[in-house]
Image 1 (cartoon, rainbow, N blue to C red):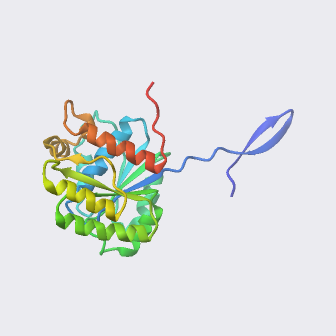
Image 2 (cartoon, helix red, strand yellow; image 1 turned 90 degrees about the horizontal axis):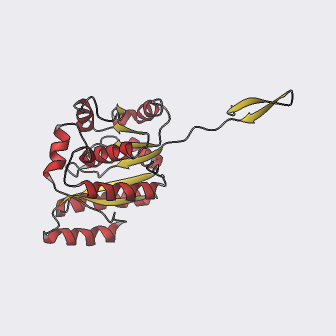
Image 3 (cartoon, one colour; image 1 turned 30 degrees about the horizontal axis):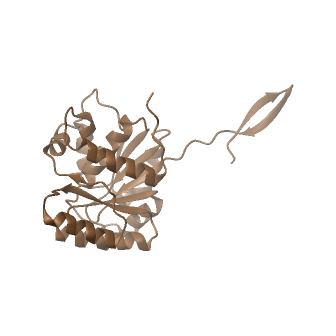
Length: 239
């Protein structure tokens, strides 16, 4: 049924179309492999989005529930980021719950470490996504896994990019990793370096953007800006 409303006009009632609620953009963090930093990326992007003025929620499809555990220890005075924790096998229910949270700008989805348990649902999630970020370390094992996963994403014609995560730029493997990823797909021009503050932020339920003097803030900001531009989401301007 059309979304309509009525208004008075010179003694008559005119039926007009009511403003449609905004449809949240869906950003999926997925790599097809554990240990790539999907949950780290999800929570830090969500925090950055919330502090940038976006209405953001997270969806935790990972049975390890790392994202949900992080939410559970967030300080009471921290900015509220709603979270839905549902198995990937119940994907439709997860998205219904997320949309029932209210009008959102952005839903960021954390996925399981592997894609074999629920392949049909994983493919369905990719088709729902407005953009897919594929985080990866710079080691050879990480690269083999994520390049295969990116090949599948590209066959599904989903907009996507690699994000080098928890990096050590001084290592020779860093430049080799960038070259290999560029050959396999798009690569976010910003990487997230391996900082102790990122590990600590997980323990205390915060994002790097919420920790005074934390290293890694510029890295997260770069990836966030890249992702919002790629997904077509305008960040509210500061007052």
